[in-house]
Image 1: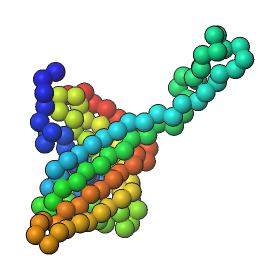
Image 2: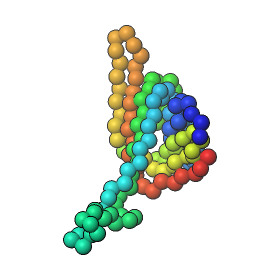
Image 3: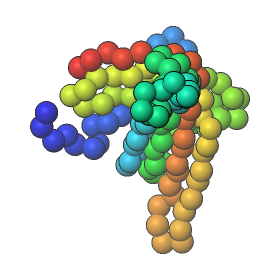
Image 4: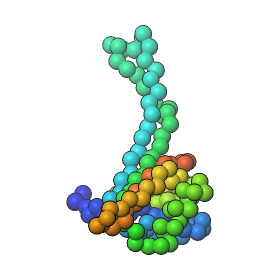
Length: 137
């Protein structure tokens, strides 16, 4: 796989609840992380005293974060409203030359900042709220 442009990693939100996805505008940095808890089943009989883990057990989750500047009133308003309403709509994360991850996410953090001689910025964090799907590129 060749090097990819970071700007091509996109976070998209279902704007209307009917599968119309739009890129959250103005993002400069985006990140998705996948997590899986482990279930330790080590016992006195574990070979050589090595830890054993229970396959397929534990909670899996994903987290999305992004930061950027205000560029689009529609997606800015949608992100803000999702936070205040506590909704869990479908989001897509497009990972260049890898694929698209899709599923329900909740906006868990929304931060606004600005300096006297700079632009207003925002940061948001999302937590998965159900099963995710993956479609290869």
